[in-house]
Length: 461
Image (cartoon, rainbow, N blue to C red; front, side, top):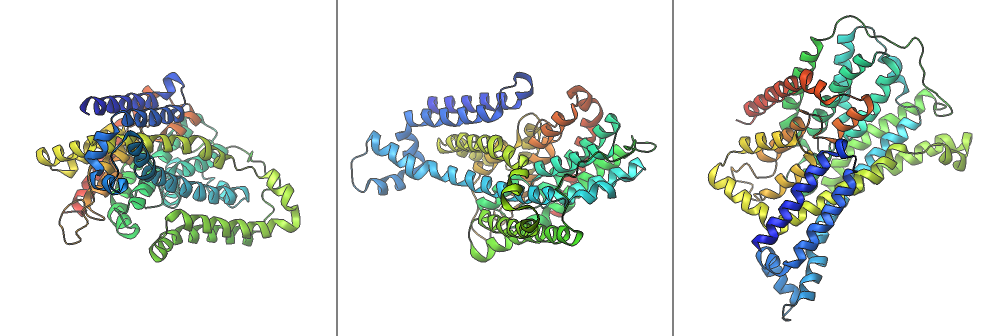
C-alpha cells in the first residue's frame, strides 16, 4: 500500500509540474490534469482493497451486505460510493461558474458595461490606477476573477494606447481581481469550493477577509502608483465596434445590471433558505436575466438572428478548458485523499507544528510556483472540519484556517503570476516577460501580501 501511495503522489507531483510549466512546453494544462486524474484512479484500484479498508471499512462492509469481499465488489464500491463524491463537488463548482460567467457575458453582449469605457477615460495616471484597482476589486467580489480580468482588460485596451502603461495597469488588475475574489464566497473558484464543502458561510467569511484583502490591494496599488508619473496616453477616438449590441436603451441596460448584481447576491440567500446547492440559485438568476433580455431584444431582432449573432465566447472558454482542467484536478486530489496520504500529512503537521499561520504561509509560497487550485484542494482535504460549534479549534465552520487558506493561496498565487489562471491570462494578453515581472513587481506583491497577512492576524486575535 505504501508503494502505491508513493506512486500516486509522484504522478500528481509530476502533473502539477507539467501544468505549471505550460508556457514552456505548450501542453494544455487541461490535458495534463485529465490524464493525471485518470491515471491515479487506475493506480488506486490496483491496491483498492487496502485503501478502502483504511478509509471506508464500515461503509464497505455495509455495501457488501454480508457478501464476501471481492475485486469486483471493491471496484463497484469505489465507482458508486467513493468516486462520485469528488465528481459531484467538481460539477457543483463548474455549474456555478458557468452560470455566473454566462450572466456577465449576457450583460456584456447587451452593452451594459459600455459606459465604463467612457467613464474611465481620464488623464491622470495615478487616479486612473486607483479607480481601476478598486473597480476591479468590487466586480471580482461578485463574479469569478478570471471573468473580471477578461472584462477589465478589454476595457483597458480600448482606453490606454501605451503598452507599458497597459502592463502596469494589467498587473494591478490581476492583484485586484484575486483579492476581490478571495474575500467573498462567490468571487473565486477556491472560495466557491470552501462554500460548497460547508466549511464557511458567506457573511462571516466576507467579514473576516475584506480588510486583509483590501489592505493587500491598497498596499500594492500605492507602491505601483509611486512608479507612475504624468498622464495616460489615450486613444484619440474610441475604436470599439457597437454593431447591434448597444440597441438597448439606458433604462433597459440599467435594469439588466440591477438584476445581475441583486441576483448574484441573492445566491447565498437562496442556499441558506433552501439548503440546495448554490449552482441551482445561479442557474435561476441566469434564467431570469436571459428571459428579461430576450424580451428586450425579441421585437427588434427575432430569436434566431439574436442567438446567431451573440456568441458567448467567454462561456465557450470556460466550458472547454476550465471544466476539463478543474475536473481533472478534482479527480487527482480525490485519489491522493482516498489513499490516506493527506490524512497522514495533516496528522504530522498537527503533532509537530500545529500553527495555521505556518500552514498558510507555506501554502501561499507553494501557490507562487504552482497553480493555487490544486493546492487549495489539498489544503481543504488535509484537515477535517470540526463540527463542534463550541470548539475553539481553527478548523470549525468559518475557522481561521479556512479563511487563511483562501487568502494565502490567492495572494501567494500573484507573487509570480503563474500561480493563478488570472495571472496567466494577463501574461498571455499583454505578453509580459517573466523576468521583467520578477524584477519590478515581485517584491511589491510580497510586501502587499505581508501587510494583508498582518491585518488578518490582528483581526483574528
